[in-house]
Each structure stands twice: as C-alpha cells, then as structure tokens.
Amino acid sequence: MSIHAITSEPSVPTTRNLDRDTKRIIFAAALGTVFEWYDFFIYGSLAAFFSTLFFPKGNETAALLAALATFGAGFVLRPFGAIVFGRLGDLVGRKKTFLVTMLVMGLATAAVGLLPTFETFGWWAPTILVGLRLLQGLAVGGEFGGAVTYVAEHSDVDKRGFTTSWIQITATLGLFLSLAVILLCRSSMSAETFASWGWRIPFIGSIGLLVLSLYIRLKLHESPVFQQMKADGKSSKNPIGETFGDRRNLRLVLVAIFGVVAGQAVVWYTGHFYSLYFMTTVLKMSLEQANFYLLIALVLGTPFFLFFGWLSDRVGRKPIIVAGCALSAILIIPLFQALASYGNPALAEFRSKTSVVIHANDCSEDQSLFGRLFSPKATKECTRVKSFLSAHAVPYVVKADAASLNVQIGNDAAMPFEETMILKVLSERGMPALKAPAEPNGPMVVAVLFVLVFLATMVYGPLGALLVELFPARIRYSGVSVALQFGNGWIGGFAPFVATAVVVATGNIFDGLWYTVAFAASTAIIGALLLPETRGRDINT
Image (tube, rainbow, N blue to C red; front, side, top):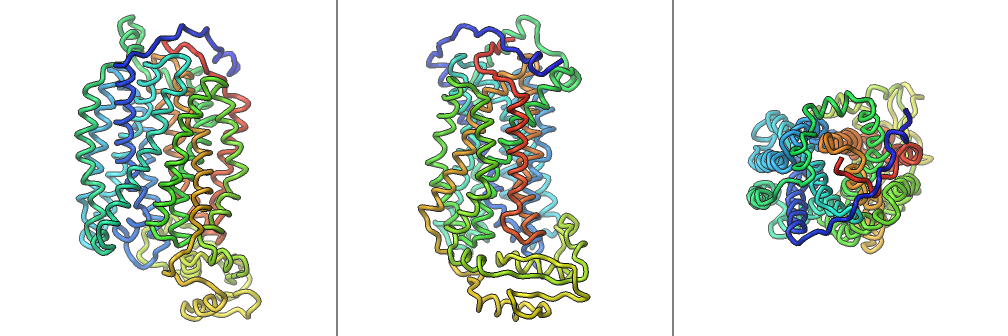
C-alpha cells in the first residue's frame, strides 16, 4: 500500500465559527505551554554557565560537553513521555493529561534551583541534575502534542494553521522568557553574586509560574472532538498499540519523523541554542551580549511563526516546510560563517591567517569524547593540546606523522607543546586574549540571528496543524506526541552537543553544522517524496 493511498484527503468539513470563549481557551492553552517551555529551556540558556558549577574543574572543554550532554539528557525521555502521556491523552482526555505534565515539569525545575553544586555535593550534584532533566524531558514529551491537539480540535478548518501556530510559537517565547529573566538577574547583581546564588532565582521562581499555569489550565474544558469521540464509543482502547502495531499508522509516524520533524528539530535547535553556545564559547562574546542579540532576533523573528501558520492555511503545509528545510541545508553554514565574522572580527581575522598542525604518533583514542566527558583532567597530551586550542578557537588539524607530539604554527618549525610558549606565539600572530572583550558588529549579528530564527519559523510554524491533520482522532495525542518527541528528543535536542563535540574533534568551528545540514537536506527530500498535503482535512474522524 502506498503512502498516498493511506493518506488520501477526505472532504473538507463546514467551517465552525470560534466564539469568544473558545478563543480564550486557545489563548490559555498557549500561555500555559509558554511557561512549561520556560521551565524546560532555562537550563539550556545557562548550560555553558552550568559547566563551571556542576562538573569538575580542570578540563573546561570536557565540562562544557558534559553540560551540553546533560541538556541533551532532557531530550532522552521525551519520546517515552510521548508514549506515556500520549496514551493517557487518548484514553482520559487532553486536559487532564497536560495538567499532570505541567506539575511534573514545574516541580523538577524548582528542584534544580535548590540543588547543591559539585563543589559542595560532589558527583551527587550532576547525578541528581541529570535525573531532574530526565523528569523534565518526560513531562515535556507529553505536553506539546497535547496542547497542539487540543487547540487544533477547537479550531476552524480554514484557520487551523494559524491557530496552532500560537502553540508553535510557545517554544520560542519560552526561550525568550528564560533569556530575559537571566539577563534581568545578571544585570541586577554582580557576577560573583550571580555565580554564588543568583542563578537559582530563575529556577525557584518557576514555582510562581507553575501556580499560575495550573490555575489557567484548570479553567479549560475538554476538547469537543474528544468528547464526541467518547460519546460515540469510538475512542481507542490501546492507542500506543494502534500507533505502533498498525502498519498504516506506523508508516504515518515514520513519515512524520523523517519527512517533517527531523529537519524542523535540527533547524530550530541550531538557530536557537547552538547559536547561543557558538557566540559565547567560540566567539568569546559575553553571555549578556549573546543573550541580548538573540533576544532582539527572537522579537523580530517570532511573528513569522504566525505568518507561516496563516500562509499554510492558504497554500498548504507541505511546500512551506519542505522549502524551509531545503533553504536551511543550503544557508546554515554560510550564516554561521557570517556570524563568526561579525561576532568577533578580530578573532575572525586571526583565524583566517593562522594554521596549526598537531603532529603526533596517534591521536585516535582522544577522538572518543564520550569516554572522557566526566574526566576531571585531560590526561593525554593530544587531548590537552586540542582542548587548549579549542578553548582559544584556534583552527587545527591532526597528522599522525611524528614519533612524539609537536605543534606547528604556520610555517614555523614544530615545537613541543608547552602552553606558555604556544600562547606567546599565537598572541604575537594576533590571537585575542582569552578574556578580551569581543567587539561585535551588533546590527549584523542580529541580522544573521534573525535569518536563523526566520528559517526555524518556516519549518515550525505550520508543523502543528500538519501533524494533527495527519493522524486519526482515536490515536491523535499519541501519534502527534511520538512523532514530535522522537524527532526533537533524539535528533534535534542533541544537535548542540554533537556540533560542539565534532568541532573539538576536528578543530574546525563549522564542521559540527554538517549534522544540521544532513538532517535538513534529508528531511526536504523525504518530505517532498512521501509527505502528503493535509490542509483542509476533517479531523473529527
């Protein structure tokens, strides 16, 4: 059976007008989801900072990778959250389920704010931190699919793309809120105070958001599609079994993951999170600078989520998403090259005229970054050299052509690795000091970040409506959640970690972006070939 045969379009139902109460309900659902994304992303916004708090000192590169891996841990359980809460949503209702997910998320976030650091609690600190991130991932795995399903089932058929785009916008708004709160906290206290206890405020303060969000969600009523399905006795007795056990439904899930969500996930997380780490760890911008520029780009770009949701109601979901993935595959690397040039011109000029070669007997063991994430020190000499050069954003290549390790800078003679001497030679060649303030071209940095956000709006704005329309009502919560969270949890969420790890391994600050390029390009191809157009479908069946 072909994918086109199993996804043929039914007739378009008659449009229902939205009354004021329904609009209020849609707004309340979206607002509650913003707060939940804030809870989930507040750690991601501070991940580089957390590397100094919750992981052993001595190898800053490994500590950063460990912090990013912990950020990624929040994505590991998202597919399982989709399965657990998706099943509940299809069995007991949309409203009750995302009340539970919100409670779990809020409590886990507040607990991070109370957690002792590595200095006072040892290895228990990162262990518990990972556990709390896993709980957050479990909760958000069931939240987003439920919210977008809930809103779509309240929407007019010819406005579904626009109304669900208000849910699509919530992830970016949650990130915006987290960045704004962090910027406010950092600007209202000294750096020492923020590092001591001020960082806890955004986490503990989420208790207030939790209470407000629960109050808002308790005032919602159940989805009319779910109520009608229950009244007619057509609800699924085993939604997860039907989702994975039915060949037709499983094919829908696979097409949704690899023909839509995978590309959306890497484009969104690269533009929203990896760009932030790139600015702070590679381009040496201050956290305040990077947050400020990204906040402006988010303000300028976020309305386009709504625009592309609205446009998908007129031209269809598929062409916008496929075009967004294709454009992202072409533009991501040039955009980050521009970000490097404008973000730290002095560093860009130094990099353009500097080449470093690490001559060694064998560096192969040092390529396994996963095995040394939590190592207190980089003990292997080749590892120490690469960590040193990566920390200063110095480009390098490794050649296994020498009996002992030496470092060659430009055409100079190779020399043994000694940090003071290497640092002196690189400084003479124009390398900015590690703590030298970056002097970015602010307007151009914002322009580049805006384009990255704009690309994310293309692939994400129409996504919610497409996924809701793709799955039948009886397994909709499960199908939408599973597709979203496998793609975002296991493909998109680790994009910042994979990109950073590849950069450390290769010495090229742009090599990590090939992960995003590969998934965006493959999604564009698979989506163009297999993804059906869903605009106008009757979602009551």
